[in-house]
Every structure is written in structure tokens, then in C-alpha cells.
Length: 347
Image 1 (cartoon, rainbow, N blue to C red):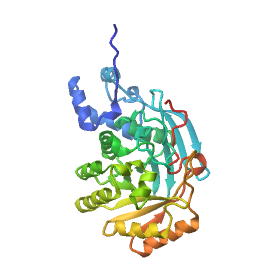
Image 2 (cartoon, one colour; image 1 turned 120 degrees about the vertical axis):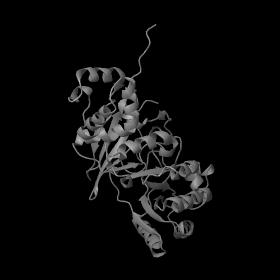
Image 3 (tube, one colour; image 1 turned 180 degrees about the vertical axis):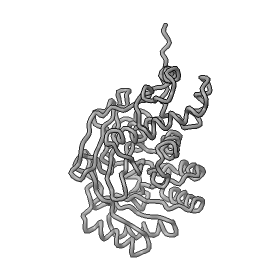
Image 4 (cartoon, rainbow, N blue to C red; image 1 turned 60 degrees about the vertical axis):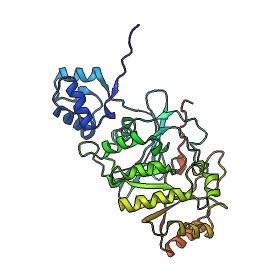
């Protein structure tokens, strides 16, 4: 029986790990820095292009590692310039990644899992089977693939695509360190945001990571009854536990937390909801992102009226909670918040 050789994804390795891998094949550790420069600064897609490495070393690398370069299955462009990519992750599955243009730079919304276990009722990924976590390299490749295609440099990364980032904690942390490393993608930690539906134990883990990324909490409701009806995770980690974790995060990191709040018609858009939100966030270093909820196929929620969204925002601001309304981007190509759903993905 012929033993199948499983190739390693070279983008799964941070710089120190790659140095150790090279030592195992008799190579000097400094070669890892050369390889990192080729991958993350030069954007090459093969070992053949690494012309300052010997042919012998390049052959060694090809025997051990692969590049895991994504194939673009489909690319859609919104009327507002937002671009959505459907990527083949090379195992028969696909993920979606969204590029958004802002005055402060280019932001990429990346996926962290193939599918999602959280079951949020306003998210299009709900109802599609969870398949697996993405590896660190598969997360990083989303950035590299878009940079190659657009011939640009990504300045901001948000973990708000398909999947719950903190449910794939180790791979997400590894990816962030590669994205942030000066010899990696060199994206500033403050330009990386991690969104979570509220996995409380992982928020405590995140405190100990000592990274300067922004934490975003998907809150969306101010009572346990209402939040549990929208987000089943609330049954495991109710609002009181979640807010307590946020208070500890604030105290230990001194970093502001962004709270995401999607406004749904006749549900969580009322001034009474705004009053409870003010009370919940009192004393926290916080910012509220108000999101006009996007209608999804088979979804039960409709977008709140612009009048009610503005009234909700104004109430928060008038009572000491900084709140802004998120600009809607890419809704015409199903690329806006909650609309990513892995079209054509193997189930």
C-alpha cells in the first residue's frame, strides 16, 4: 500500500515555527525570513519564484509544503464598489470573503469557519451544516488572494465573515499573529477586529493574549428572552455573564469594546430597548455600531425604519453612549452584514 503524503500548508506557520521546520531539514533559520518576505511582501504563489533560494532548497520545500493558493470561483462587484469573493478552499468546500472600500483604507471581512454552529436567526449562514474550522493559513490566504487579485494592500481585517471566530480560537489567534507580524502581512493589531456572538470563556482567554485587536460583541438585544430568540448562544452565556466578561476585559486591557446591534422592525428597535442598552453599557468603555438588519432568505426579521434607527442612535448619544449607524455596503450582492451564506458549498 502506498502511503499518502500530506503536504503542509506553509502559510499555517509563523516565523519562529518555520525556522524550526527548516532546521529539521538542515537549513539555516534565516531562510525562513527570506521565505516570509517572498510570501507576504512579494506575494509569490510558488517556490519557483523565490530566486534567492538555491534550487536544492526550493526542491526540498516543494516536497514538504504547498502554497494552498485559493481559486476564485466567483467575484461579484456591488454598485457601491464592494467586492465579494467565493473562494474554493481546495477540498471541495467554499467560503465567502468581502472587500470594502473606506476613506481610511481597504477592509477585508474574512471567514473563520466553513459553516457556523451558532444558529443566529438573522444570519444567512444559519441552517447550513458546519463542516470544519479554517486553519490559520486558510484564513491568511483570504487576505493574500484578494491582494493578488486586486493588486492592493489590505489595511484592515475584520473577523465578521462566515463562522464564529472564537469557536475557532487557536487558528484565529495564529492567523492574527501572522497578519500582524512585521515580516508577515504587517497589518497593525488595532486594524484587526474580532467579532463574537458571546463565547464568554474565550473572551477571558482573549484578555490573556495581550494583543491590541478590537473586540466586537454581537449583542442585538437587551433582555435574555429576546436575545435567546435571536441568538441561541445566549442560552449558554446570558447577557449578565457576557457584560461581566466585558467589564473584566475593559478593566484588564483598557481597550474599548464595540457592540454590534442589528435593529429589527417591531423587535429590538424601541426606545425601551435603547434605555435598557444604556443601563447595560453604563461604565463600560464602549461604542455601539447600529446595523440596519438585512433581510435574508427564510428570515423572520425585517429592517427597522430609518426614522427609528436614527431615533435609537440619538437616544444613545444623548445618554452618554457613543453610537453610530453602520454604512450599508454590498447589500445588492448579498455581501452586507449577515448575508454571507456559502453559495454552492458542499454540505
